[in-house]
Image (cartoon, rainbow, N blue to C red; front, side, top):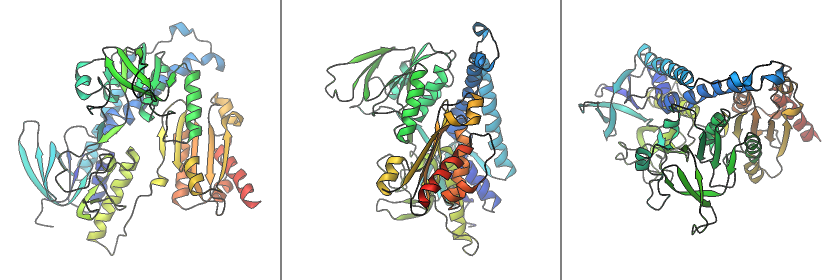
Length: 488
């Protein structure tokens, strides 16, 4: 590959890009990574990490306010959250991690190319810096990891007052980026969209005393997750004075007043209004394909680049475009940071298959084994099929759900909301799905994921000895119950 500047160029230094770059360089590929400034991508800068940092502040605040039930008498009127200090802490955490990504590239001898990338062809990338100076680089292989951006209502037939232009002119309209840097805790907040991002912010601000309303077009919040999770979080949020309006659609925003209608009111004959300090537009994210849409890669209906199971880019005829791979949000398969990282490793492996076929074997990504997490109060974690999906594919599947109200650790910690739900195949005991709502759900789901990846069954899950008392032992109890049903 001496005719190229690099063996591999990776576009985007998010969780998919920088993990791929580190692995590729360690395995001997001459690698460069292109980033226009946001090292660590959305996750480290304006997504996962800053959100979870603020959520930790809020959780401590909540514990203090609720301290009486633990026998700690505190004057509640003296408990105040210094929002400025919380923001400072958030920025410190973000800076440490983003600096760490750059250091990781340097120590692994990955060249960092600063600027905006544009593909001139499949092997040539133009990098334009902030001063509009450009330089071309070539590579045998290309990994596109351009990430995503907030999805706006820019459709002329869509809601008025919720476009990119209104985001610039109406200070009351926010996305997940702007809301992370608010200078004050709002008294009222309306969240437009009851998906993962919207619900996390609803939990965050409602715990700080903000009056939160969630408006969701579908008939339930967290609609992509298992219905029991949706029902549980709805109940918890309502108990925390969050107003949830499902089956409603927004129509326009004028200053601090949002107009919305029932989803069935297609002619908008009965408009309703709500007044808030801020409105969080949380309708999802859109893949970024600009700059690489001239490579002939098929754009899917969701706006993402099409790939095969090996993450190779596909053309308009669903044929492989050699030596171009797409990972992370740009391929729209499952827009999560850890999925992007996993895809990055798979893409690098499959590049090395072409270089050293005697040493490497083709790998693919199994999305049924990729967990999803929501950092609400309590947390949510899922992997595999929902109950509805499982019953469609496996009509005789077995399901066991156990509430945390009977768990010793949950009772001791005062965290009794939630449950563990396992779904298994009746014939072989294969784990089809796991759904957890608990204080530590995002940590304990990893054990189930590991077992599914190793092709273990519910019998191995039931036979494992879990420590007591823990939140995780409820998984063992659910598994043991299911094995008895299988053996009948």
